[in-house]
Length: 199
Image 1 (cartoon, one colour):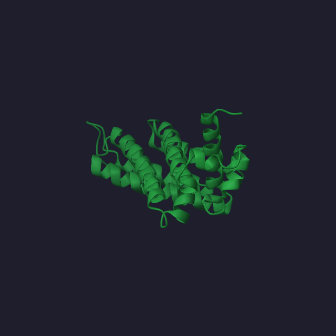
Image 2 (image 1 turned 45 degrees about the vertical axis):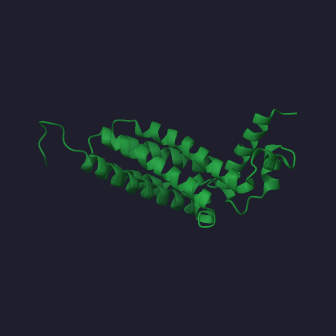
Image 3 (image 1 turned 120 degrees about the vertical axis):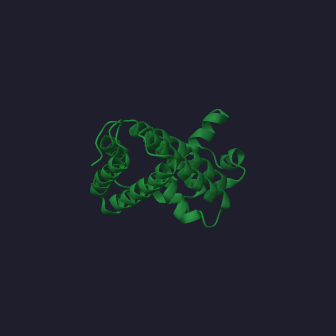
């Protein structure tokens, strides 16, 4: 018999994959338990709030995991390299899943956020976490606070849209195009270094 912590972790892992791949409503509790190799009844033991509580936790966890990956990609000094690193990461995820896995927040948010305040808050917090990470990297490049926050929101919106198009078209070209445009926009927003001529 698996320790309680391991069973809970397996349930979280299974739910995160299933919610990301097929959505909240199409994912049943029995399917989650089957994928997790967990006995019936254990979901409500570990998650007394049921599927909704599980969705909140998987969204929060996915936001942290993706946030770490996005932040690492954005750590590169060159804006073009940063933009392409993020979209390459997403493109690889799409190809590896045969274009079945989308953004773990968007998949759940589009279905459930209007019906569950808790899920809506988890999704909103996750997106805000990503915007904050992106804005911090933009500020490191010299873009002022408010401008960095606005640009970060624009970048996230663009990448989310490109990810959706890429998934639907089963082609990562929209992600590559988005990266090229975003790199140019970011480069324009970075103030020139002291002593450099302004063009």
